[in-house]
Image (cartoon, rainbow, N blue to C red):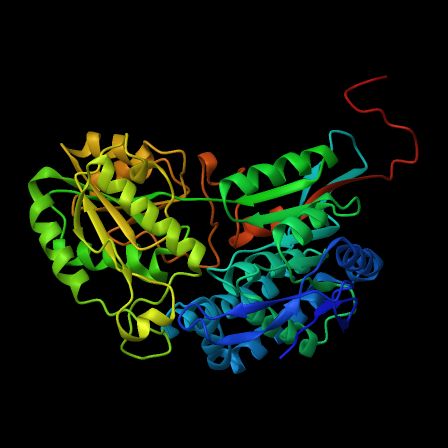
Amino acid sequence: MKYKNWIGGNWVDAKSGRTFQSISPADNSDILGEFPFSEKQDVNAAVEAADKAFHDWSHIPSPRRGELLFAVGELLKGRKEELAKIMTREMGKVLNEARGDVQEAIDMAYYVGGEGRRLLGYVTPSELPNKTCYAIRRPVGRVALITPWNFPIAVPSWKIFPALIAGNTIVWKPAQDTPRIAYEFSRVFEEAGIPKGVFNLLFGFGREAGQALVEHAKIDMISFTGSVDVGRHIYEMGAKKINHVHLELGGKNPILVMEDAGLELAADAILWSAFGTTGQRCTACSRLIVVESVHDPLIAILVKKAKKLKLGNGLNADVEIGPVINKTQLKSIHDYVELGIKEGAKLEIGGKIATEGDLAKGTFYMPTIFTGVTPEMRIFQEEIFGPVLTVSKAKGYEHAIELANDTQFGLSSAIFTRNVYTAQRAIDDLEAGITYINYGTTGAEVHLPFGGVKNTGNGGREAGQAAIEQYSEWKTVYIDYSGHLQKAQGID
């Protein structure tokens, strides 16, 4: 089936007529559709539609905008299973995880919809008599949203809903690997009755559609989730126009296991964090740091459990790990594994492209665990974005923290310990935007800020009230009812 862009409330082809296909990573013969290959002309049309709709949308009271998000949430709830199955076909995550992806968008719709009645400003006393001072939130304007394939409904919802509730209009370019689920998500907004031009959808690739969108003179803000290199490029382009730029970039997230940890609990959490979504999460645990006294018994448990994990098509109920997203990523993962072997790390399990039986139809990689990994190795430092876990020994707490913080990233982190003093110290000492105690590195909730430090981003946060801050600007108001000119700062 051939799908279209959604611009100004109409479904339209790319002006060039060019298209591309969406291919299932679990079965490369499964084509999910043909999509517009958008370029600069299509971007111009979408941005003009967003510009035209901005005035009216920004003047609708935010509680009314919230009602539309509630309607979106209800529609998503009714289509949850259908959307989850399409997502599993298109990007590979197992069906239960895909359901969670959709549920996160449902939760975000309800949460952000409620924030429509709480776009809080503040009132403060004036230094002068008969004068009122307050500050309110106003929308940024026309917002470009560029989202990844690994959470193709959840991550867009983190951006779309706060942007809309704050009164912005949007142009959304989803990842080229997951256009079908983006189409289905957009149909929900159409069904909910969003005004024409407020929400615009552009399919395509970064070099053509993404670049033109970021460069467009009428775009006031850019929100991007993806790689550090692309994020840095977008930041530079945004700076030239003095745009608002929000970046959510990479991770190299550590789990620390102390000598007093419950090893069975830690192992279950590590496996889920490292191999859930086939390791294709920005919050995935890719570095395990274990104190020496429990290193060997923990590795034995991990390897035993990892051997039992079943790979396959995520639509099958007994499958625990799906494919990686495409052949390019499959090669990149395997290149890192070969590099790790050359660097001297010990391969405990995995390290192979899976080609047995039906796995040959797709892009599958065996869950992989390296031990003996040290900080100078590239597999310790660089984001692999696949089912590869590196393990490093620590001499004690201080050394474990040193290893954990030895990275350019700072998104998520976790520590397993029964000692409340150690846990509290780790909260202060771990250089990350998120820290879990006796839990893995994944599992963010929509009402709390999500984001990181260092090269993980540029200081902003998704989700929670912090998300509203990203998509709004402060306006300060002074009302003088004294009846004569009063000068501030004590000027006579």
